[in-house]
Amino acid sequence: MKNAAIFACCAVLLAANIALIHQNRGLKAQLSLPPPTLEVAVGVQVPDLRGFDLSGKPLEVLYGKDPRKVLVFVFSPTCAFCDDNWSNWQQVITALNHEAVRPVAVDVTSTVNSLFLAKHQLADVPVLVQVDPRATLSYRFHLTPQTILVDRTGKVEKVWTGILNDSAVAELKQLLNEKVAASQDSSHHPAFK
Image (cartoon, rainbow, N blue to C red):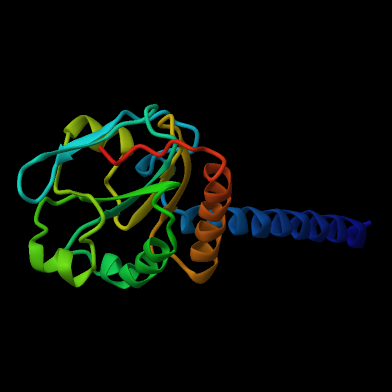
């Protein structure tokens, strides 16, 4: 009788330990992800992206009037992780078909200068240096680096937060190649506004 009680207690403790191990694994997986409230969610409708370029001229990315997707690179010139990510972003920018995808970079600190833009080969990429505060809130430009793919209507399709690894770069190139194939059916490609 005494042995049966000890055996039952051991079995209960073993089951509780197994349950705790599973719960800990799930919690560790959740903690390794960025908090979901800090990045814009997939499927969210974002407003047109408005702000100013380095020279102070207004710059707009308008949705619904252009058949192309928009790929937003969110960075800070003082962010070490962004520095590590520039080579990945350059791979993606180089692979872009500008008739299918509009790249745009966003400096969340408004501290970028012309030397930085030249160093990172951003002469052909519109760079918003001062972003409309409403856009900052809607797009949740709080984390850097971020790479955000937005469809032609302004709906967020995918968000990559942090340094892009090789599989993320490959995924991004694949997504953009699918967009290229779809856009080649269209005969109208308006210029970037």
